[in-house]
Image 1 (tube, rainbow, N blue to C red):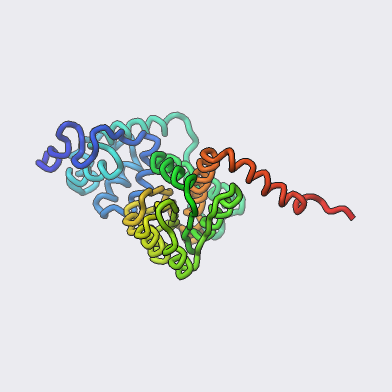
Image 2 (image 1 turned 135 degrees about the vertical axis):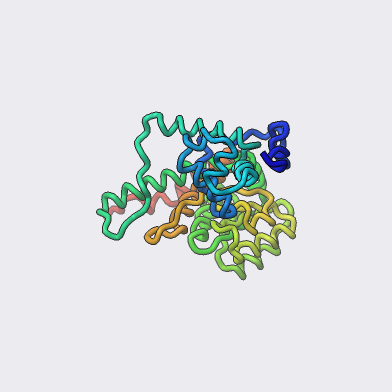
Length: 314
């Protein structure tokens, strides 16, 4: 075993990782692999792909064995384990064994989400439904509830919330803004980058700015978040790339699942599903914190629109 690996394994804790921080549960391992693999180096991707494809087989391997299997080094294997949230390779092996046991517990095999141009519509429905379920499960498993709670606290007390998103993420920004408005909070969604920046300069301490970007590198979203950050507002990033440029200006990061993209289903479709889950979690948390004012506001909004949903009498 190399000195680098020995140093990482010393005392059972990885360098740079707080000793008291718990490793992810086995159920979260597959989600972490899917989310983080795109941002890994190619050698680390080979390790991540191997453990995701065959958790039982990899659980039986030593660090040297997995390094040989993936054509990498022992240090790369341990670095991959650390990036996935485990103090060392031994902890990853335990999680792999747990994941393998779950997979062998009698569940039906997964349905592939790859859709062919000649698939019957019933197969398309089944594959998309499975992919949506997996996306939601991965997002829930990987969502940091401490970060979520902090974002909820900031929103519940905010004088004003600005939400930035373009394209499909812009639709999610509008969804969050209209939800917050219905419980009496001042919220604005911005998809125009110029308008987003000119509004961001008006923010200050006590305000909240939220950037929604699947890639974590959308300049039109990052720029107003940076301005809001510099103005002292509490900033939140909802992103599938927690290591992306947007994280530089985010006080709180809420990670969404990175679903596989296919020719017939671009990333914008699957990323929106996970973003909407996070938005619903934020909204529900804020509603809980502000229930005394939120409940009457919701009732008033329902009453104001009730006549539009009732059958008209002649």
